[in-house]
View 1 (spheres, rainbow, N blue to C red):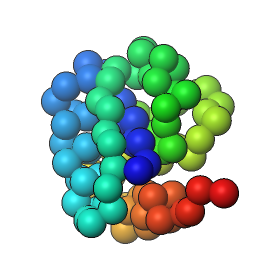
View 2: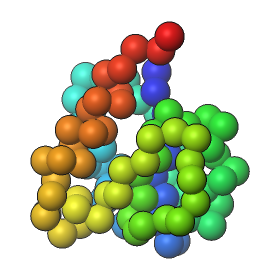
View 3: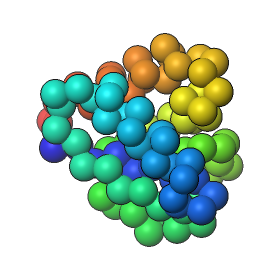
View 4: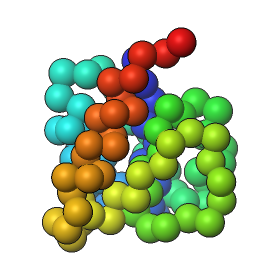
Length: 93
């Protein structure tokens, strides 16, 4: 099971919208979603297979990162969804 960290400013409203969209994209792929704030993101990275954020971040992450703003605006969702699926469908070595 893959773990997706969804982070936004407050860790509640925006991350919930994005998390729900990630669940839809995952479909039948079993995933664990952790919602948090951007400030607390680093505390969850050891558990993450993918990070989706509501705004751009400057730090380098040890796992793939997708900017999830498109799920709020509706612009560029296909590319972001494809990247999310690529990570979720990738088999662990």
